[in-house]
Length: 304
Image (cartoon, rainbow, N blue to C red; front, side, top):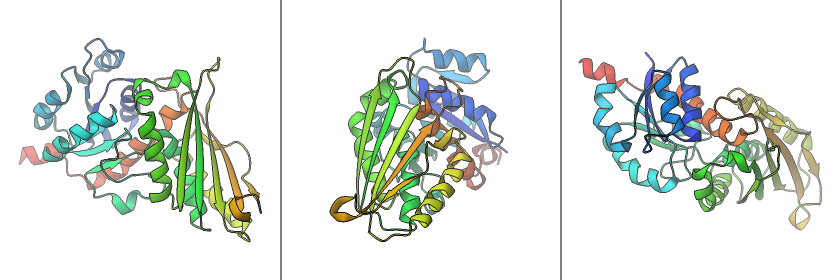
């Protein structure tokens, strides 16, 4: 039985989520929640036969049992999720948060999902975090990462109101995830909104400082293995070039590891240049699909 899901937020991310959930064999898009009755996302969902509401989370919680909803994707803002999270928990909903609110533990499905899968509220970090934390984690598996710095460059047209409103939270949450999930001793994140026309494909650069004398081949192998894993749920995720490993060029004579990534979106809702949208929604759906077997559908409980 497919797990019935609600998506809160009818903007770019919410609309992309709906498209991906509709393709899933283990998830069912039961409701799209918004606050603007004229939003394009709500109109698209209605045309697809999906229930919608423009009355916000109150309307969702009033219909949880009637619609048999078990899991909610939060695609609004950090402050909104901070307010909604206790209400989801009280309603018995598993919540996957695509804002940088960091209410629950960070989840990067290619790295740490199995360790935190029983948590009721999981945070998808940020688009930059989903792109770069796996690389830092891969390096950490074979070498000590004293410092990691990432730069995420997004097309300005692919950065919606939610992204722009959460720039500070983006940098703080991503930096923290580089340490907590990636395993770096210290982390720093930078986001760049590029207004170029035509819009650029999402790019991510990872710099890591590791001790001198590390096994360069082991680092490269770990990175390539991780890229293959992420491609399992984000097909457009790829290395631009082979990782660059430079002894003596890191802080205090350490070895500098440079990794250059590109993320091309699947084009489910926005054009392919919006890889920043695609990677976080794809990671959220992949997380939900792996959690689905352990969730007892509310519909089964209601029937009892």
